Image (cartoon, rainbow, N blue to C red; front, side):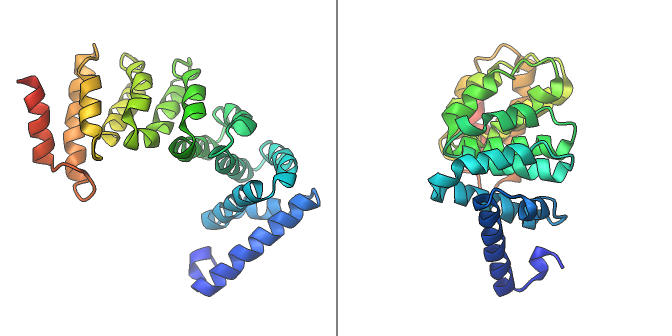
Amino acid sequence: MSFYDLEKTERNKLVKQINTDIETDIRTNLRSHLLHYFSDEDTYIRKTAYLAIGKIYQASPELRHLVIGILNILAADSNPKIRQTSVNAAGEIGKWDFTVVKNFFDTGLFDEHHSVRNAVIGSMKKMGEKNAAPVIEWSKQYLHHPDKEIRREICHGIELRGRTHPQDILPLLRQLQFDKTKRVQWTLVHVIGQIAYKKGCLEKVMADITTWKNKDLVADAIEEIIDVHYRYRNFSFYTQDEARKYIKSLKA
């Protein structure tokens, strides 16, 4: 039976049990429960496990060295689900202490399994929302990596910070405007659209991208921005027509 097949009271009991089991493993420097939960087929069981790691790390300073030590072992496991959950757990810690988990992302970014690489992107997003400066600084070293997938993943990973603070990531996005890989270009256009629909963001995005030299890419990005204002019409600050009129006014 999967996590969300359980009644709410049963789910709460299970969450409490997972938290207890994981803390027991950490305090005794063992991994049996961690291996069990980190490798579970149910995404929500694994999520509960990595959230538990974040809570324990924050609440119990005396256990932090044990948490990091165990996670380093799990991050090298042969099972990709365990590696994936380890990266997600590191992401929970990195929301307030990036330095101690940076190595998980340096390694996970190059993992052979897509789920682990996706965990890096997801972790970048949640860390960037709470602890942006070190994550953005770390991202810079991979912006021009020879592997196009690394460039694409970094571009995607910084997106969430840009939704509320586009000015923080636009200097990085600008550096990708002449990337020759279509997949990277598509991700760049997608991210520009995603960081332009919240209150105060369209103005900042347009002020920046209208100074870019790759006018074809800017034109594609503007089309995406206008389309996003329709797709996300229940969440965007401007209506699609208002966004279109604002953009048109800049060209007048």
